[in-house]
Every structure is written in structure tokens, then in C-alpha cells.
Length: 478
Image 1: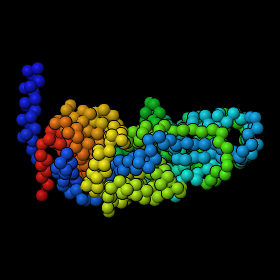
Image 2 (image 1 turned 60 degrees about the vertical axis):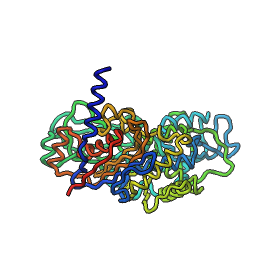
Image 3 (image 1 turned 120 degrees about the vertical axis):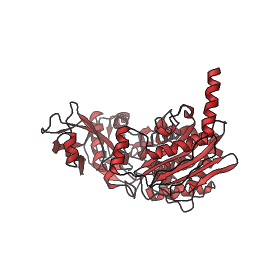
Image 4 (image 1 turned 90 degrees about the vertical axis):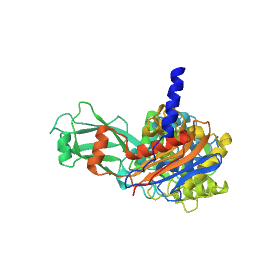
């Protein structure tokens, strides 16, 4: 007990003597903190900054307000009344996809098994009318299109529109070979991949790259190093229509359902249809927790489009979704002013919001959290999600004290949420940093040494200062 008291006194003394914080060189920042008596600190709080994945806070709040806690996605198989005759469907069948981000190939198989039939004597219609418009958001980087975090967001989502494969290369100068698990409807070629040492790759400015083609063929090219074990690969689906059709054929075959007709795309279900099978997603709070804690972009943009669909009673899109989010939050007294909303995930470089505007969203959440149950859905420091290992919150005193959404894109590092202070007060805060860049030599030195990045040190100082209830002192570089 005596040792604890001595340590505590030393801690308070050190906290009181904390030096002023200096932001990273060349970058810009915005900080705002609010306690029980209003805004306690604000610096550059009205500057417009790309929110990155902190945009998901707005998307999640709008979804919770508009859709309700009991909302579930429902993917249905329907027929015209009387079409099912024993183990036969004598007529057309409709699969109504609604952008369910949880739907897997095995769920699709289970849907066909629910039918209890062995033959469909008619066409199978793939209904994609839940959404319209672009499958990727305006302002998404074209270079990210092969990556699963930027997978296309369409009405048809199966396994998050992401597929897995491997590439094998065991010997320098030898061949590389692409592989796909049996039944996964993509193909990989690696004929144009050179196998070489890491040093040779660096000297030749060579890396592994991929081109996508219709039918979900992925051509690997460039260079890799040899490895005894196959190297795992993840690809965003390129051809969503082919992905849907191929997985439907796979599910019908595995379920023992023969099909005599065609596969067709439609944008509506028949009137008065009879529902034979339904797959329900998890309830909305469960999905929101996954979206926020894991920063899942596919979940976020399906919620955005679904909110647009629900609010306007029209097919969802990025445009209708962002307009609906603004309208829903405005009804609650949250004025987003000149903020620009381009998607629900924060991937778009077109998104712009100020720290003060983000704080207004957080204030509403805090005032209404007894009804919303929102704060518990956020990542918690050293506990889960994207704050489990974030280096700005690794001090022992910070464990489970920060509940916030991270936001990271190239040159940007953001955090927005709540801190439970040492004095027992819960404060809302926003820390935005942009323009973060280093020369190649300095970047490599930090990477190799695993030292915390300057923006991490700056964020850490702010968060620990708020926790210790010390006045923030930030000195801008000349």
C-alpha cells in the first residue's frame, strides 16, 4: 500500500510538469475537447479535414436513428403463388438481394436448402433493385480497387465481395503459381511474376501487382520473394454480376437443385410474391459494433445506402444515403453546416468535416446514450477493435478509458470519441491530423526502429492530458 501511494504522488508530480505539446512538422491539426461545462479547449476546430473512418460515427448514428435497434437485413427467395408443387418449382424464382454485408456463400446454400425442392423449371431472377448508382464511392482511390477494404458495395454482397487465394514461389528465378480454393469462382494467373530477393526488388523498384478482368480473373505481375509456404492473397471482387451468378450456381448445385432456365438480372420482385426462404442478418447493434470496432468499410457503406433507401423509399445509393444522413442528423439538432459527405465509410477523399461539427455528433450521442447504447459499440483502449493496440493509448492508466473511432488514410490520422478521466468525468474529444508526411529516409528509420510516429506521440500527449485533467498546451511550430 505504501509503495502505491509513493508511485501515485510521483505520477501526479510528473503530470503537473508535462511539457507543452508540439504537432508533427509540416502537418495540420484540429483539436476540440468538451467537458461538463462546455468546450474546454479548441484549436483549428473549424478547419475542414477529411474525417477518414471517423465518418462511420455519423453513418452509424443515422442508421441507429432511422432503422432502429431491431432492424435486420432480410435476403429472400420468392416465387409466384402456387409455383411450388412438392419438390418442384414450376415457374420463375426471384432472389432478392438487399446489400446484407453478413451474407456468406454458406448462407446462400442454406437458402436453397430451405426451399425443399430438387428442380426449378423456370428462370432464376437476381433482384438487385435495393440499390442503384455506383458500386464504389466518388473519391475512392483507383489504386485500392483490388483491395478488400474497398470492395464494391452492391445489392449483391456475398462473403463481403472479397475472395481469397494464394501464390506459391519457392525458388529465386523459378516460377510463381496462383491458387484458389475449390469452388471459389475466381481465377488467378502468375505467369508474369518474377521471383527474386528483397534487395533485388528494392533496386528494381518492383513489387507484386494485380490486374483485374471480367469474370473475376486476377493477373499477378511484378515481383515477389521466395517463401516455403504459399502466400495468402485477398482480392476485392471486380465483376459483381459474375460473382453473384457463379455463387448462385454453386449453391444450387450443392443443394441438389437442378435448374432448367436462365439466370437473369432484374430490379424488382413480382407483385404478390410468395416467400419460400429467408436469411436474416444479426440485429443492427451487433452489426454496428462490428463496423465501428473493426472499422469495416463494407458494412458502413451498406448502412449508408440502406438508410437512403429507407428514408426516401427509393433504391439506395451514395447520393441518397449521404443526403439522408444529413437530413436525419439535422432533425436531431445536429448542424453539419458546410461539411461534405461523400460516402459512409470515410474512404472518399471528398469527405470534409470540422472537429467542431464532429463534436456536435458526439455531444448528441453522449446526451442520448441511455437510449442509444452507442458508446459501448465503439473500440475501447487496450480492450478491442482498432484501439486494442493503438500506441497512443497503451499507458496502463489508459486501459478501457478511451472509447473512440479511429480514422486513417494516407497522410491522415484521426480519433474522435470519449475519455473517462481520472476524476470520473466523461469528456468528448476530437483529434484530427492531416498532411502527415516524412522524407523516405526518415520514414524508413521510424519503420525499422518501430519508434512511435510523431503524430502518435502528439495524439498520446493530448489524450493523456485530457485523462489527467491537465490544461492542454500546444505550441505550433514556427
